[in-house]
Length: 603
Image (cartoon, rainbow, N blue to C red; front, top):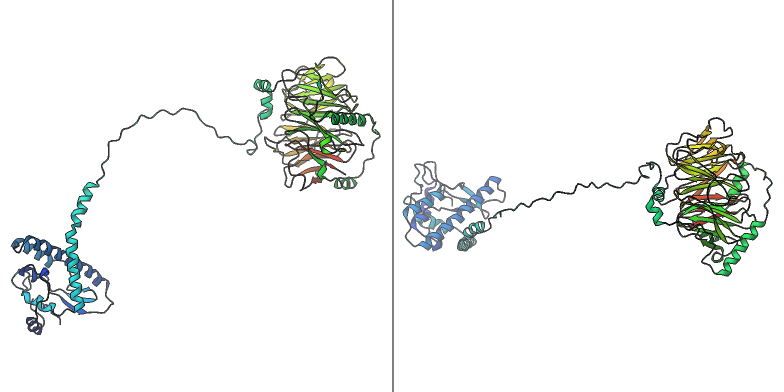
């Protein structure tokens, strides 16, 4: 049964009025607090389909909200008493009457039609007297048992929520939880110290060379370095090893014995390049040819010229000089001595008497180890600056040319008493290496900063010495420069600009032309000794140099720039060998790394 209002305000179906009069009220008494309030509700429930429009769903929410407000008002009115002020009742009626509930709303799957809309001139206007209460009571009998139970539950829930007084509690909580901003006390800011922290960046990664000297060289030139590493007294230093006395005596006697044998001085026939490559391929590194000879990083290596035995020497960072005889077991063949207190940068066996081992150090001393007397005699001392390198001016090793870090070179005669020099000259540039021409021994080459020059020892001056020939083209510091060993017609230089250069020096009266340029990674960094390319004494056109490549290797190049051979062994060579030397007559190459180990490649 539907009870719809007509356009003029009357009921649309007269039969509905007749049926309505026969209905009995069935709403709970709690929902009928007053007669005036009952007249506001007329509900007709009609089953509808589940498919409703979005507008109907929205109206459903509006209608349920109105019902809750209505039941809440009922509870308040029931608590105050049976007498309700007329004005308040009328306000409630008007509020419910003008609520935006559509005439047809969906509630619980039923179409709820609410004819309670205020229309001017309509007999359904909620004035408290026009609508009969029997209409609502009659229509309530049309509800099913489920609908009546649901309506009862809604009523009880509304009462329960009203008794909780949630809105009052929420309002009270909002007041109590209001944040109070405390008064902030501003603290006086202390002025920051105006110290700028500079970020440390590796000069090697930036490919920037130090202005004059490396970090280690600057440390040696400083006064604090001299105090930290005191120079040993000029008295002879005994050859004392950590090995037992018996082994030490055997070692010295063996060294003396192999030094007395005169080597064949006849020139060896120069084999062609292919045969030379074959000989290099036959050189291998075995397990028993690797040994730790000194404690720390190796700065220099020398090979005894004996053809019957293999004796090698190495100088490390803290002044130790270690010798290793490969013909004896490792525990009996290695002996270390301490003739210096700073890095031993240059080592040579005397070409005239191999029983003498000359060592030069950053501590400003040059000593000669005499195995026959088992002492290290001091040959030269510079109390102001550290020494960098030396070479033999005379073939009998009686005269030496010594390079100094501050840019001077000095000529030392070992036959004169004392430890002073015979001649001192300023080259106006830092000196790293000096090397004497193999034929014209009055010439020597000095390499240092970016300047490489060939000088005539006969024309050296106290100041303002000029080179005979300058080797130009280096953009960074030069680590070494050496004449070719047979004729001296070539010079190989190792530069920090990742380049190996070969110059022609067959004519020393004019400019030395650049013959070959080889790209090579020479950036060894702070913890590795700088590379030095050295010639094979048996040939005038091949040399070896350390490598940063992986797997680790020692590279041999031809003067034309061709890579002749790479000495490598994945099992026993796992580090960079910065310092490498050849045996004068045999196919032996010795490489030293930064941990004090020597690697000997031989046939």
